Length: 323
Image (tube, rainbow, N blue to C red):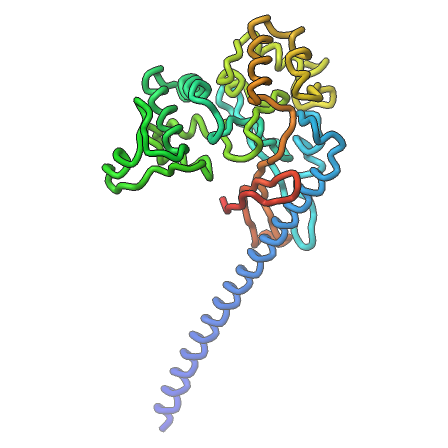
């Protein structure tokens, strides 16, 4: 009997230990889920903070690097909210390929819009920024046009359903606007390596015009401006200290004023090109959409959520994806 009792007690002890271990594991999982949920709400609160800052912008009709929401560590880095903090930032690429982190929001109009850029602009952009020869670059530009137009008539070097359905696995041509920049990877001729070079300067949000006050050099080159003209534009924007992103930055106040404001710092051919771009609706000084990354963290450090977000000036969340 003593042996049986000892055996029963041993079995019960093992069962109790197993049950306790499972309970502890379940509690850990529940705690982690709770921490992640808290971090998600902190991140969502950060989005509302970004919208609040945009709402108090004193000059919404002219967007430049001097606006408080473009790069302001004290306003967007490690901001406390409840039992956590959020950080709002975006990354830009320098000409040498190095990346720079900024605390704030980036207007989407500083980029080329995949849904509105012309064949000539896409061709120049792919050739220059993508480092692609002229012929293949034109083929990719025309494939982009075929992907976003509504018909099934391919451009001479483009592609429609006949090409895409012959792939393995096959799929249909979109024949509609791009809904994300990542969709470009489905287009004929766009490799992952090429996409990585092009994507930082592309968008599917905003008005479609390029903001002359914030556009990067690769975007300005794609618009047909010379290197001398681009240097003049950057010089104008940088202000007296010759550094963009500081308090003395200049921003052109109205789209119609772009040619006259910049005529003093760019060659005549670039001034004429700027006038053509303004007349064609390809330039702007406004911004309707803003992109950023947001990291929400709980105070304990156990919960962390990293998201990419695009919002409109009027408060709509255009895109929200976990990174």
